[in-house]
Amino acid sequence: MPVGWARLRSRGMNITVKNSLLPILAEHLQRSGDRREWIVTQKAGWHCGAYVMPDGEIIGQPYMPVAFSGGTSAIVGYVVRGTTEEWKIHVASLLQGNRSMMLCVLMGLSAPLNSLTGGTYGRPNGDIDTSYAMRISDLAGYLVHNRRNDGQAEYHIIPSVFEAEILQGLQKKSGFEALEEAGMLVKAEKDRFISKTISVNGTQGRFVVLIFRDED
Image (cartoon, rainbow, N blue to C red; front, side, top):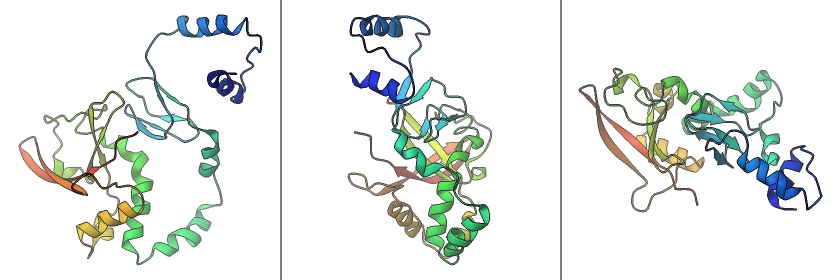
């Protein structure tokens, strides 16, 4: 059975096994119903302005319909385990005095909060809006550059939770090295990370642009 039918079956759909009926079903699925273009992704994370959870749940409203086709084996890694108190004892307690690891954990926890910044400079689709009233200095976080599924450049602000406490006495480069060690940064062809000056509403601010490797 083709991969498409096997995937539908694995998700609980009863698909006919009669070869004479499968072409009719395929014709119906391709030509009937809503004909809008969908973005199909195998990776959780930010897609089209919405956050896709590993179990397929979509948080937010994407500017294009999004479908998650990732394997269900990853879901078990994101189920509820233990209690908040147990997390404090076995995880949070180990972060005390370790600013690099604290930075990594908090960056991961803050990732789903990106949309609360109002997109980037007011545009939910990730485009830069230089007329946005909020100044760069008011947007705590790092400017992250990536590319959308349609190939257009995309920017996000990752909130730097408790940045003053985390980075106190820690050089900027060390912070990025910690993020790279956690797998959140990938070295580019020439430079590991670059800085970029952007002017918003007459105010200039220099941000570090984290370079992510393009998907294969």
